Length: 274
Image (cartoon, rainbow, N blue to C red; front, side, top):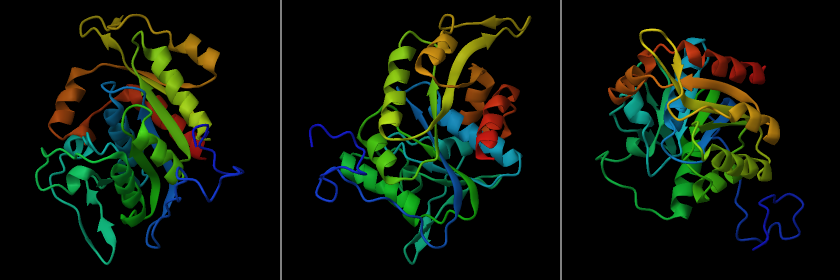
């Protein structure tokens, strides 16, 4: 329907609507306590890094964590963890791959023989793969399942929000002039879909001088706090740009990054889950 607001419950066309999507359900062998999606309004702001390091940080605190890489056409989670093996399955169950420290990961790149091969699929097929990752993968006794969403508010994000029971959404942005526009779009989409926004993370907020530790705003002064008041959302944290972090991610060593500035984000996620 042209005027669909994507809220199927109570809709007079429910059950007879081409946009209505069947909810995904975990298989009988899986158990997930909380599902958290990580979304950015645009690419290039470090969404996948935030997803990866949130998993690492939660795991360090004793939680069992998995990552579902829903960024099907631009999967980067396996590379961050140095995972090169391919996923296997049997009897309708797909086994996720374990990172070096025991974080469960599934991604489109875990299925491709050649990681450099592009996935040239239409939206329906991409959405179905995300659904399969949720339903058919053995997510064993997870405290948190993190979903690395594709950037933007397009078809895959919409389908994922409709299919998968997401408890909280974290939005990642950077302190650029377009922040107000892209964050507004992402938050409005989440609210239209009845997805709770846990808060916003401002990545690459500043560069810390290696000599005097002065905070240098590379993209100009942040206006996120005043914008948060206007749109009524929480600022979970403002993270510095650390070149060593990017180097370790490129080497597949995200699990060995020490990033104390990230602690406030991890604590906010844990507090919300209590």
